[in-house]
Image (cartoon, rainbow, N blue to C red):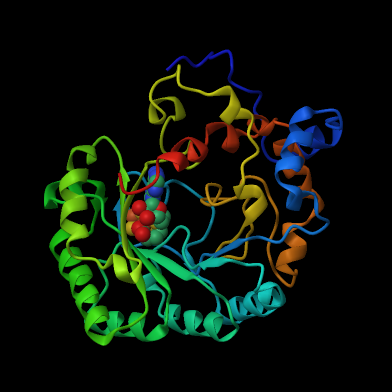
Length: 346
Ligand SMILES: C[S@@+](CC[C@H](N)C(=O)[O-])C[C@H]1O[C@@H](n2cnc3c(N)ncnc32)[C@H](O)[C@@H]1O
Ligand code: SF4
């Protein structure tokens, strides 16, 4: 990689970004006008997230090579207290019709959280829709499978990264492939037999180590799931966690692949997704979760929607609208907008 790449932006981290955002005059930027014309809702006074992610546990039984969980961090491993969780859900309840989906995972393994299914039931009872979590499925015992199906969770994503034991275990360290295959096929059978409404997504993070297995993987899992129940087998490209686990240029296919339009495109994640981590901290987005770099503080007693509309977060959005997101190191190294169009079953 060329470290002095001409398009590499100035890096702004921590407190500096706010100063930069304040001093930017973006009123004449065509990018702002065009973006607002295409996305009138973003001009609204109060931005309501379409999607909310609540990390109920920070901590994992696995150590996947492409995951940021094992990188050094000051963030303390642990579980979100139930009272904090219910407080967040209660404060979000007035907005439930605008919140289209809610995820209960960020950086950790949800099945370690003994309160997971109580939380799902609580959120369901408050009227939230399209509840989901992802799991490595290693701990999906018979008792957990029963609790999962009875909880009414709408979607469960099984993170399986190979169709052979050697490949899957080389990527997902500390996870036993045979156990995962057995657990996932068992829960599919149990769901079908009991006619439970949960849909399953079998998901493959495409990377150099497993790319060659995708066709066989897709054929195998397609024969196990039920499209009639909205199950899918899908894949997407590995991303960099804002540059924390991999080099952007390598991930997107070489340093000539940066696309000016994508580099200037405001990222929808800072407008449509609110993430709250297990310790109550609020990151910029789901890539900024090892240890939030942009400091939106702790949820504490704050109203989550007010936090999502704080002056700091609004200033950050202005940077994006101005086509200047690459001033932020995490955004500059992020590959999500490159990989999103390539997500899917092909
Ligand atoms: C961080 S995990 C947390 C949930 C659970 N432990 C799991 O593995 O499904 C959430 C999702 O991120 C995916 N993931 C981890 N590192 C990734 C990377 N570098 N690029 C893309 N997806 C990644 C995992 O495969 C998983 O589907
Ligand atoms: S199982 Fe999930 S959280 Fe755990 S290391 Fe792997 S990707 Fe990260």
